[in-house]
Image (tube, rainbow, N blue to C red):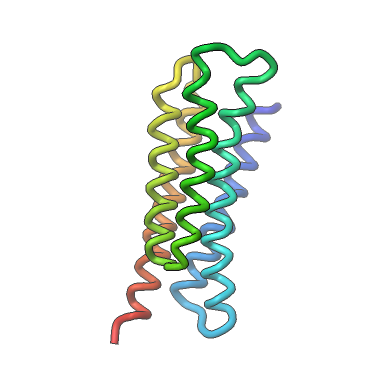
Length: 145
């Protein structure tokens, strides 16, 4: 049951990425601005949520070997906030995309991950990265004369 729920929530979590990226590519004025802010804030929120899962994995009994997970958890949140503090949508999107990729890379190094979970996270990150590229292309095309 929880595996199916996690897969459904993961899939549902892609809709804001796709919708906001398409908005940046095709909408104008207020809806463009809303799409841009939505995309960046949502990407930041997801990255922070995923980082927080490492912190949660160390509970209820943190062990010596879990120190890296705690540091990664905090570091990814700080990195995501730093991306937003650039106040440059293109730079923020690239930084957030790299954060998602780095987090997946780290997570794939961890032992004892279920195969279905690793596969799901890989596909979700792949789609998230594609939407970040769409977002960047949309911004770049709008900046062109």
